[in-house]
Image 1 (cartoon, rainbow, N blue to C red):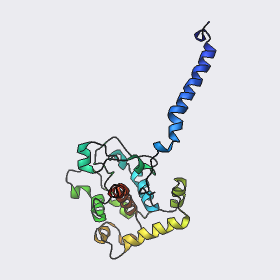
Image 2 (cartoon, one colour):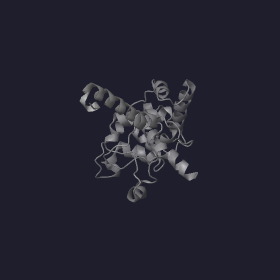
Image 3 (tube, rainbow, N blue to C red):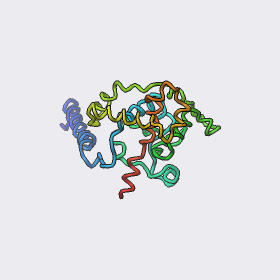
Image 4 (cartoon, helix red, strand yellow):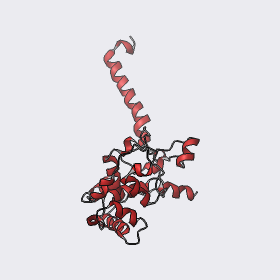
Length: 223
């Protein structure tokens, strides 16, 4: 009598083989360094950038914008260097996306000045008449809530202390509220007077957008 005539034994052995196969092909690679490339140029999001990322997800921006440049000539010519695995080391969750109602944003960091983003978020149609992007000017009227910033960065494993988080928030606030801030005029146009000395949700969102692809550009320049 062969094993096929013993259904219970056959089922147990089949389960064992499947479990071994799953362990070898799925779980072991997850713990193998070669499948988790890292780069010293890729830095965690700051507390403000992480707040901006959360706002980006909250508003569903990832439903219209991808964050992955495929290694295709047409995409590289339009968006820049194709996406690298290591640049997503701190992304939880990944926001690669699969729909491009709007352009890919994986390389938007540094492409435009902050003033461009303030104006565009206030009124996309004011810059691109046929844009189907909704206006987000109201984000500049919402004071940024940072009470959970330390908890967020701690859970995500960024390694920041409470002092680090406070310094990051204060440093960015000082930057965008400085009288010599390069984008002061554009920011003041969309930000109510009572909030111009505070961080707003629009400030945080722009900080996040300016982070996208910035580290990769440094990494590529260093090669």
